[in-house]
Amino acid sequence: MSNSNRCLYLDNKHNLTIENKEIPKPESGQVLVRIAANGICGSDVHFYQDGRLGNFVVTTPYIPGHEASGTIVACGQNANRFSEGQRVVIEPGIACGQCTNCKIGRYNLCPNVVFLSAPPIDGTFCDYLCINENYVFPIPDSLSFAHAALAEPLAVAIHSINRARMRPGDTGVIIGAGPIGLLTLQAFKAAGGGRVICVDLLEKRLEMATKLGAGEVMTPNQCKPLQNIGDVIFETAGSKAATAELFRLAKHGGRVIQVGWPDGNNVELDVAALMDKELDYIGVNRYANVFETAVTWLSDKRIDAESLITQRYMFDKAPDAFKWAHEHPHETIKVIVEN
Image 1 (tube, rainbow, N blue to C red):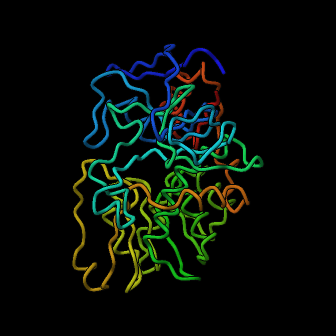
Image 2 (image 1 turned 30 degrees about the vertical axis):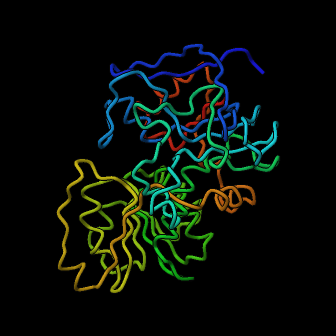
Image 3 (image 1 turned 90 degrees about the horizontal axis):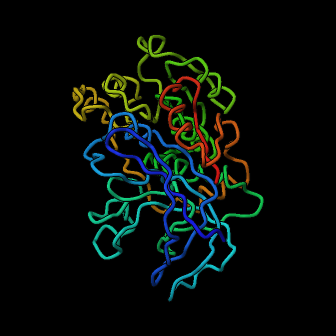
């Protein structure tokens, strides 16, 4: 085990620097994980370029990152679920375990949740991290650390599918073919969904959607004249314009799933269409109870992780990785940083 802990810090002036810190020691109920790979999330890029996302603002230097895999190298007192040397992925939302939402299994709605990388909470872009043992999940030797790092965004997709109460053979429409959209496409098919239509501005992403199983792809302009085309509509782009059109695309009695977070929060919606079609309009807040499924689907190749990884960097080049993700969004699906 190395005797130093490299940590990537982001400050409020959009600067990224790597600093050497002491290796933390696991407290009671915690394990120490040697991080092997991180994915750069769209939220990480937002904090890097804008200094904020929603209600979270970068005010002091903090460590970004929450899509991580690695190896357990030490266990604290009363941590007995894992052994040293086990390969794991990290679920980054640490809930209190005591509130009503936690007790009914909806711990993603815990009002006291501590989410790694939500400023000022430090995240996973480091060499060593201590975390409650209940928020790590074993991965098989056959699953690479880079692919395992996609378990976190895949968890969002699987949770969205669960929230949609989809039926076998449903037709799905996915707005946005970025990482979450492409994972939602694959999760929808893996869960028994039928035909999928993907909508995006970028031809490269639509080509990837076709490769990953979309039956039809189109641009927003091609989608404009269409209506009543999907049993389940997923908005994964975080677009105000796209969100405003969701009810038009849904069939009568359909479900509309808001996965993306539109800029500005407020969107004008056609409530008459919502009521006339008796639609279910459903929000998604991260995930709950899906990491084991995510690991299984990545391991048995129901999810094609490799196709989504467009760039790889080593940890000492992590600032370059963020710069690339910020400056080349049209050429990027998922950037992986490996320790």
